[in-house]
Length: 330
Image 1: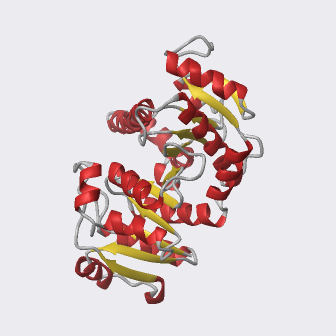
Image 2: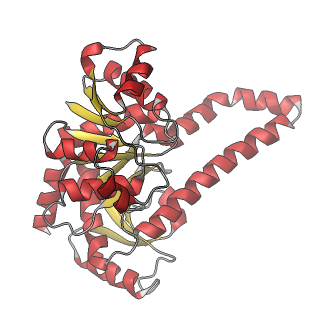
C-alpha cells in the first residue's frame, strides 16, 4: 500500500507530517510517499531514525497556503504538494492521498483531477464524531456550502456505505441535522431533503437536533457544508474551552479536591481518548474517484499517523466501489 502525504500541509508542517509518516510506517506495513520540498523533507528525516525502504520523497516546488483562495491556487500552483498528490492518485502512483493543508484546495484539486464517482453530483467531507453510543459520521462539514436536496440524499447514501464497510455497522441509521425533530421544521430546502431521505431505502430516522448527535441517535447525520462546518467548529471550541476551564478550576481548588481529581485520572484519560480527534486522524472526502483524507490543520503526529491508516483502510475496504454500488441500487 502506497499512501501519499502532503508534507507541507498544516500549521505545524513539515515536522509533524514527517514524524507522523515515520509513526505510520513503523506501526503499519505501508509505504508513505512524502510530497513537498525535497531539501526540507530530507533535513527533517536526517534527524530521525526510520525504515529507509518505507519512506519516499516526491519533490514539489510550491505550497498552497492555508489562507490562499482554493480554485485560483490550484490553477496557478500546478507544482504544489496538493495538486501533485491528487495527480499521483489519478496516475496510480499512489493508492491514497492525505493532506492537512488548505481544505478548499484539496477538495478542488481532487475534484478536478480525479473527477466524481458515477451518481455523485458534489463531494462531501465526512467527520467521525465520538458520541455516548458508537462513533457517528457527519457529512458534509465544508465541501459544499450551497447544496441541493438531492446532494444531501447522496451524502446519506455515501455515509451509509462508509459506516457499513469501515465502521462495521450492518444497518446504519441516517438522520438529517435540523432545528427540531418534526418533519415540518426547517427551511424549504431541509423539508425537501427530508422527503427525499424518507422515501429512500436508507434507514432514515428523521430530523436530528444537534444535541442528539452527541447522544448517538443516528449513525450518519447529513447536512449542508455551511451548517456542518459551524457544527464542527463549535464542537471543537467547546471541547477546548471545557478542558481549559476544568484545568483552571483544579489549579485553584483545595488539596482534597486535587487529590480526588488525581484518583479519577484514569477515567479522565479514557474519556480524553474517546473524544480525541487525533484518534480518528482525518475526514474522508466522499464522492471523488479516489481515496483522499483531509486532516485538521492543527494535526499532531499521532493524527497524521491515523490519517494515513484511515486512507489505507478506505482503499483496502474498497469504499468507493461500495458507494457506487449503493448509488446504483438507490
